[in-house]
Amino acid sequence: MKIVQLIAVSNYIGGDQAHVIELVSGLIARGHHCIVLLGPSDGTFQERLTQLGIEVKVLPSLYKPIHLLRDARAFCELIFVLRRIRPDLIAAHTSKAGFLGRSAGRLLGIPSVFTPHGWSIVDRASGRISRGYRILERIAGRLGSRVIAVSKNEQVIGRANRLAPSENIFVVYNGIADIVEQPRPTGADCPIILMIARFQKQKDQATLLRALARLKDHSWQLQFVGGGPLLQEVRGLAASLGIVDRVAFLGERTDTQTLLANADIFVLSSHWEAFPISTVEAMRAGLPVIVSDVGGASEAVIEGSTGFVVPKMRDDLMAQSLATMLSDAALRERLGRNGRALFLNRFTLDPMIDATLGVYRATCADWKEELVHSSAGICSLTVSNTGTEEGD
Image (cartoon, rainbow, N blue to C red; front, side, top):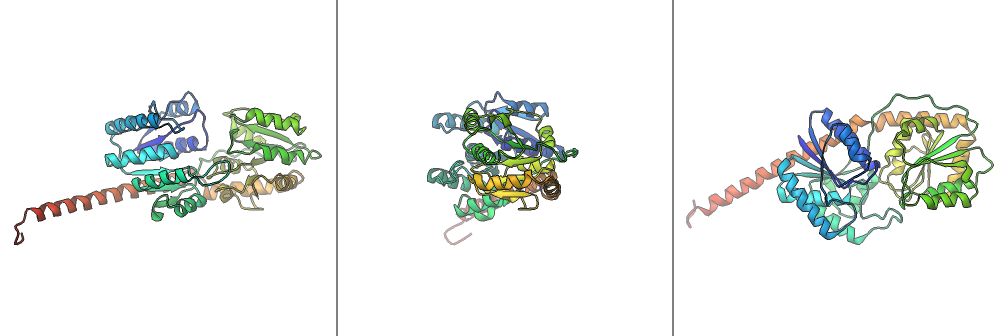
């Protein structure tokens, strides 16, 4: 198939962008022709795609923030490019690309599949439902063919809010390629706690810092990986809590696999998640994990077996989970070993690509069948209209 992957890109590689890279690479390896359409970027995402030899086309007006005039331009640019490419399928990622891609697909007669990576109707900080976005998603849901939800929680939200016909929303968990397993640190005198996340309102580095401030009598070091608008605010909080000397802000990094291999505990404290790839990466590295109980985050964790799930913004409960892990190296090793086994069983790359490809193929097959039925109906109507009053 010739498949267009459409995403309104940000200037960094987050979970959505990492998913597209892995997915497109896998589809190309299976003999499919993939083209990535994205918005202007001076960041690493486009560079990474180009390095991998993936065909990229930039839509100059495609940005994430809503702007009616610019979005209308982006829609026209998309129509122009799609007419030239003539793909078999449009696969859109995230809300802006999802709305434009499904609308363009319906106009041009091209089937489309939408992967939200977190529904736009859910506010990433509060978890509240936006009525305005719900209306837009419902409209787009009737224009597109199928939806791939990255977790069961996402599927439930989509069905409960009628964002697409229930039978058209499928769950495909994010998967990532395996790597050569590196030896885990054992019996570290000062365990390293690692969190990889943007400093933005969706994430909640503050709760992790407040939890660790309760554990000053324990030995630990915290490493934050990522950049973002709230970085300085989090730095200030670490200073005010009196733990800034035990917190390392590493910025944007490309060697996260090495950082994970050298860490002892992975934490993802957040206000909302669809299905975080960072947790899967940590389990792949054999790390025990602690995650906030938000969205589909808990679906990657077996409580007490691969890690712990903590109610969001409960620094007291997060401190308890951290204390349990910090005081027991054997527990950390067991949880990490179980986590890697769970990764290998459920979250590797090939099953994700095969399942996604299955949705793509079913979508195209149904679309062709719909066209055949429509054509048959038109032919029937034409024959009927050519008959006499007494009948043909």
